[in-house]
Length: 436
Image (tube, rainbow, N blue to C red; front, side, top):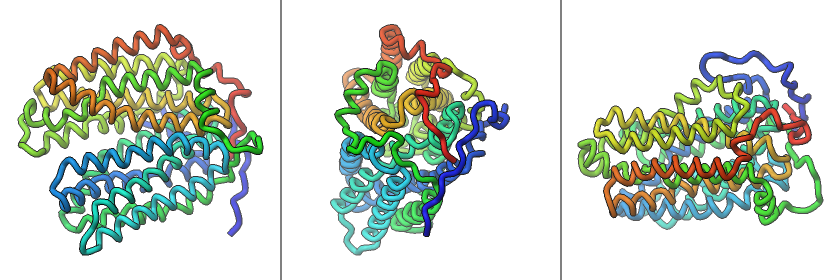
């Protein structure tokens, strides 16, 4: 089977197809290579959420322990953080199409292993955690690689729209994956939930194979270094500020660890979880999905740094309002507003990472992005848990929202490079040749 040929470069701004004024901006899907990448990412995204539910359910079935479910989450986080940085360097060294093939195969094989162990008569929690850890290691290389190739597949002007489409898939997966898992668990065993992810990932390998070759544009003859990437980050105040404001927003303003307590004590849910808890967990994903479905306006904004700051401030306000209400429908509404704001912020932060730096550093910066996105909410779980135990859930949530606003304003004043950033300042020297 021959390697796909690189197709002609994507057209420049003057030749862009017309924008969809209502709903999502679908123009990135006009470019065949990006369309393959996007469509190939949908089944694994849903499958991974189904597997998350399956792992939690199987560990609880085996042990009856909620604590071990938390341990499994920590075990999965460690390789995600470690390989997130390493994976970015790997993505800057080798052909990214080949890396996507290898890591996607690894993710599928791990899912297949989870399926096989679930069929065993005496499944082991240790085996489950080991397979999850290995799978997250593959994911930590796959994710920055996938993000780093987007500017090679669509014109620079459409990178925000392409990212918005990706976050739309994420919102759909977060909402639909657990729901589908719950339905399937009522009619089949947990083993078949693992099988779904394995089949889904294997099924889309051909779409990845059909991508054009994506070797590094700047061949230096040596492997990309993680330390060189961190040194580079220190010299890039704009990129550094995108990480700083995200850490502020996530650590101070992500109260998901308090949802079980609030579902029962604030919103009258039943002990051990109920539909109130489900709605709280779905709130942000609803906002993310709605934001993606109405994202046609995102590509028109050029002051992307201003948009990031304003979106995070809105996130902080939504968190404060969430902490003040005892009405469930209103709480879900506030969480949805926060999810919408987070989608806007994440879209532009990703776009800056992909367009404001050279191709030779994109993988490593996306690796840092993966670590921040994965680690921030888990650190927030600890911070909010301690604050709620010391005071109350409402005080922890409201205080966190206030800190988001104060911290973001201070960061914007000290790091003016973010506030001043205009995507029109990204010159051809900052971008790369694009292939379809």
